[in-house]
Length: 89
Image (spheres, helix red, strand yellow):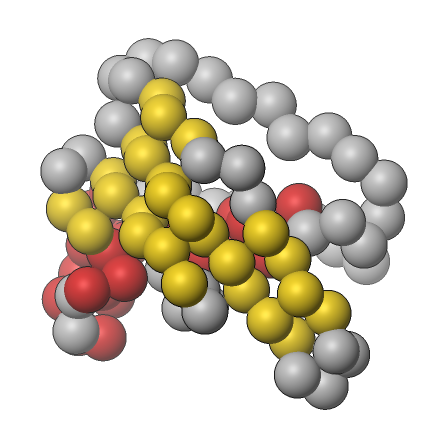
């Protein structure tokens, strides 16, 4: 299960502000993220993976609010629950 609510992120150096739609995925549901370069697709994935923290909002994965976890707890959770494959540039 994945749920996001009121998710926002701000890049100070680039002066970019992203607001993301709420997501509510049940087990085994899928989500396809499409869009032009620079609209926040990678930022959203980094937020969901707990690699960066949101300015506002919550991210819940399997009933765990990951943005409320301590860093060591988040690292352990990510290792057990999240898989990422980064793209090559």
